[in-house]
Image: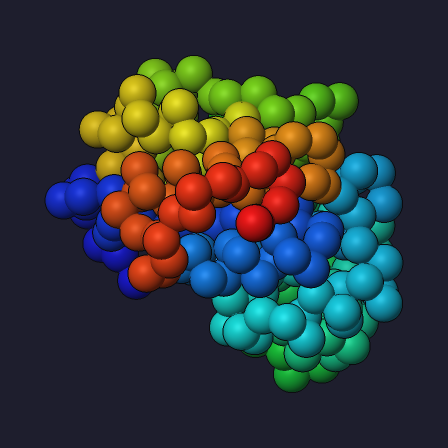
Length: 244
């Protein structure tokens, strides 16, 4: 994985996560374009929520090592159940308290699971306390609303995000740092030096024609800016929401 001690030399070195995938065709294109991680949301409040059956359908189409199941668990047991049912090796946890984190760690240990864990936190004082209670490989900075992280489509002001980045990298566990919240092709085009500071960039609503409907032209544009397109050539007519 990427170094945590300095910015990257080029955007091609930064991991790309395409999140909120709901349609099979979007999952297939994101994989072909070279996205490193593909986020599948299993949170009922989200317009991009996938049922258990829909999760299985998408997972059957993508490399298992790229799959990230996004959860906002009301019970720690839910995390273990999803891992057991899907076989995923990466989970992304939203809106969890220190008590939630301790419970999830206990349940995972009891069941012999050791997934790669990303914890989403808002750029707020005290939000990093959760890191002392659960082992995680990545911390995701994301905007919040009503005490819940994610789903806002709002960018975190750069100075605030960079301040949080420094705090996370000074933490004893020194996890990787991902940035989320309203990112899209224009964000990358206008802010390359800023984005180079992060280990992973998470794209969701900023590459959509509608919630859960990825805009394929924007996806291609994004991956071009990130220095990769998976070897695909841009079609002469690339329509919103579909690859033609």
